[in-house]
Amino acid sequence: MKFNSPLASTAIIFACLSLGLSACATNQKISTNQLSDSSLTCAQIASQDKELDVILEKAKHNKGVSGANVAAVLLFWPAAVGNYMDADKAEELVVKRKAILAELHKAKSCS
Image 1: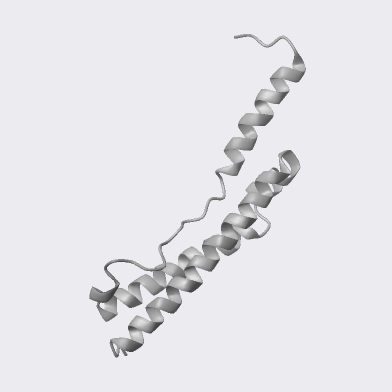
Image 2 (image 1 turned 90 degrees about the vertical axis):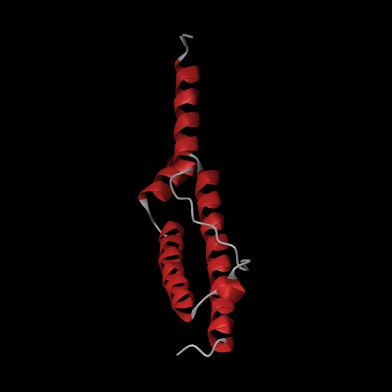
């Protein structure tokens, strides 16, 4: 398929860039409650808590000024808003999960 119109070609390039950029700053989503929670050992609770710290750092980075966010603002601002909201939701889930792990840590008398 040929596009003789510069406007059509630009629109297609813009759409592809927008889709590509919107996927650049995705955040890992976690389940706040998990079926295996009651069977976690103290070591597993500590390990998950450390993993959540990494996820939280990545989410904070994705909310800030990054190459993907700057490009998204310049090319397609709704993608930047989506990145921010996605990172905000990821942070919220991490905080909730960390609270659950803290309760488990206390209930199991982990040191």
